[in-house]
Amino acid sequence: MTPHAELEAQIDRWRGYVQRRQAISPADVEELEDHLREQIADRQATGLDDEEAFLVAIKRLGNLDAVSHEFAREHSERLWKQLVLVPEGPDGAGTSPWRELAVVLTLAVGAGLAVKAGLAWIGDGDALMRSLGLLVFPFLAAYFAWKRRLTGAVAATLCIAFVVLAVVLNVYPFAKDGATQMLAALHAPVILWLLVGVAYVGGRWRSDKRRMDFVRFTGELAIYYTLLALGGAVLIALTSATFQAIGADFEPVLEGWILPLAMPGALLVATWLVEAKQQVVENIAPVLTRVFTPLTVVMLLVLLPVLATAGGLVDVDRNLLILMDAILVLVLCLLLYSISARDSVTVPGLFDALQLVLVVAALALDAVMLTAMVTRIAEFGYSPNKVAALGLNILLLVHLLRAAWLAFGFLRGRRPFAAVERWQTGYLPVYGAWAALVVLAFPPIFGFA
Image 1 (cartoon, helix red, strand yellow):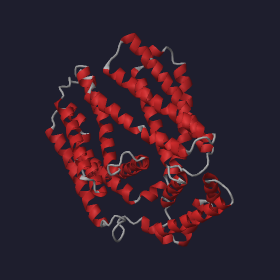
Image 2 (image 1 turned 30 degrees about the vertical axis):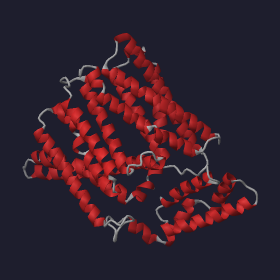
Image 3 (image 1 turned 135 degrees about the vertical axis):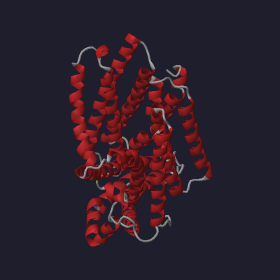
Image 4 (image 1 turned 90 degrees about the vertical axis):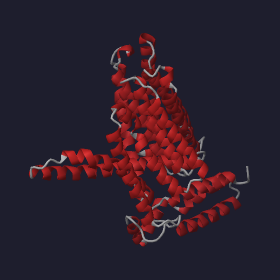
């Protein structure tokens, strides 16, 4: 390792945090970094080591939110410029914003037409359920392939992966209403989303930072898409009420054209908004995580005694087990998004302790679910659904156990926050591998039943 490599890594993480501040320009970031390095050099001259010098320099530099607030007051026009839908001039990559908007709208229309064609041409409802993601996610990957200027090798790999998945989902002789068919339909979007992630990171999937950026993007996309969906629902309701008032039937147009075109199209538009207005949402993300983390902790602490007193584990309803798995996945998503929204250079605090409580509560719930699943398999035998659920819960158990251990070490000051981040992002491909196993291997193993 080169001298002061860890110090440079800390400065890089600090610079990344500063660059996400809404009111600080690239030139201001460079000026702040110069001040930081001067402070570090002064502290090192007094005999402090790299880590001590960095922490003292950060403290002397001042609270970054206060600095950002001061910049915002002095340069308020920057805030308004960031809220402009299509800014003037090219972006940092030299791409015309209007050209990018045209590309996004073209892909949005393409995704909508693909879904519309799928509804018309794929008569089998089961086949449509399996293939619906394949009609939308390739357009998202195409946007990032264009945006990130993917190399030919990475683009070809993504195309091959999409084609292989499409062939498997449509050629496998799934039994009508079979379990493996439903499992394939549920796990295929996980694979598709990770393929979109490869395009998002520009093919640099081994980069922890880029994987965390993708986690952050996923959370912000959910926020934007929800807002667009709510706004669209209001407009549709008003339009439908107007048509009803004049005695016209609006449902054929709504079901035949508006929903098939608008729902996938809105996903592309929301993606573009995240890319264009990322800094605006990043001010909301920490607030959301701090609101929903304690609420989720309360929910888990209420669920645990209820499940413990619900009777024998063999008699636990299967639908309840599925619901608990969905809650665990939601907790994991909240944990990932909370970590992505956290400043990596601040010291541990109360919210970090609360996140540890969240992980421990989720671990306890997962242990109950695993016990129930093993008991049901021992009592009634195995099935594709039971094996898939058992495998997912084992993956969650490993993920949460390691996350709890690292979070505990971070709270005690024995581990850097970077170790927590690396584990969270480094484990993501495991879920993709499991989803691929369920989609590709489970159907032939269980006779496509």
